[in-house]
Image (cartoon, rainbow, N blue to C red; front, side, top):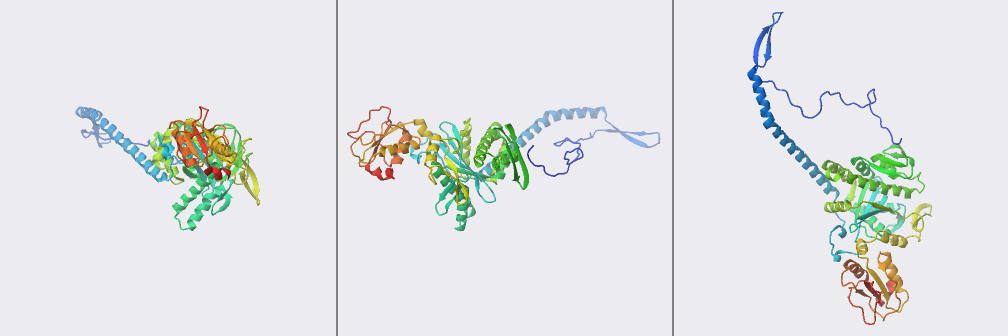
Amino acid sequence: MDGFVANGAKTPNGSRKVGDFSQRDGLHQRSRRSMQQTRQPRRDDSGSIKLDMNLDNGAKKNQQRAKKRFSKWQMPRMRTMALVFVIAFGSFLITSAYLKARQVFQGGGGAVALQDDVDPARLNGEGDGRVNILLLGTDDAAGLTDTIIIASIDPIHDEAALLSIPRDLYVEREGLGSMKINEVFPNERNRALANQATQRQAQIRGYRAVQDSVSEVAGIPMHYYASIDFDGFRRAIDTVGGVTLEVDQPVYEVLSLQGQRYVLNVQTGQEQFDGLRALAYVRSRKTSPRGDFDRSERQRELLIALKDEIVSSGTWSNPARINSLFSDFADNTETSFALEEIMRLREIADKINTIESIELVGEEPKNFIISDMLGGLSIQRPRAGMYDYSEIQNYVRNTLRDGYLRSEDATVLVMNGTDQPYLAQKQTEELESYGYTVATPQENSIPRQRETILVDLTNGEKRYTKRYLEQRLKTFASTNLPRGVTVDNQQIDFVILIGDNEITRLQN
């Protein structure tokens, strides 16, 4: 059995006891004597006179009539009062939850994909067809973000995935140098404080710095962040009544939690987790075969289980539980969501049945990150080389494919209109890394092009792909191929004619 036992006074039979009250708690009717009574003096054998209080027939009839009046008038009134109380109390809970939610969800982020029928002009680039949320678990003492997870949601196809970023991944930060990615937040925050920023401003700069670093690694935009410390995580699990997990590998480790020795002993099969046990489960790593990578996998599993428990237990329809859940988050969470955005996200999440769990470390060819030593420091770095995230970006962009690109699934043909070789191939590979469907590129088969041209052969039907390509190529699409250029493949939707203005960019 895992866990620790706190000291506390007990009764001889082992139970804790506060009091021994015989009366039930709640409301009780007070007994009232009838005012219509007759006094009949009676002398007992000792000579003392006693008064017998007996109800006469008239008093009994009056009491019966009173009961009828109570039944006809008081009971409906009491039911009404009870209903008013329930409504008032429920309104209080909802209002309280609303105010606490406003405290937590103060805004600052933004994702156009949360809306229906999005205007393509609002898209900033590939990746905006999803909602990407950076989830951070922080060590309250040092501010290290030891848990870094991307929660990516595709509202168009009602799908979601969780992707862990290793906390020891070595990254560069302008003005701060190189460091482990879990150090970015406290280092950026401290720099802001040194430059006279307020505590709130410094926190926001720290979180945005982590967003930038993770976006650089993964190659996709981070639209929101949500940070919760370990105590808030524990309390949230307890608020929903704990979670159930199907455990694949046993975990045994002795940890220090809340200043006490905690023994974690999790067996394979279905296991129940309260807040404290869940916290130990997601922090354990020293006895796991893959160390931090196994811990990251357990963190994703717990998040999915928490989401499932919130949905299945009816938390959103329970004002008291919502109030309690927001109380857990209010003092332990920082996020860039606005309240309206989080409620819209809840509507989307209700349609998602499964959440995919993906990682950057595993069996070939998906083993993109390796462990290494740097000046005696244990770090993790991209397999392709220090700070080379190209393999990771390619994998992430295609695994978490933009929802609009996926929906339209347009086919793009690239043709080289310069005298430099392989530019069409390079442009095709770039587009492919962003999740585009591409045709075989054509090199030096068309007349010389001074400027790059984008041709839309769909007559505007695939408007989101058109918008993305226009932004990427910094040009506007035409509907006609230039003279001397023909396309035989009827499956082609867009044609890119590489011009001289793209030579430098594509060769670097």
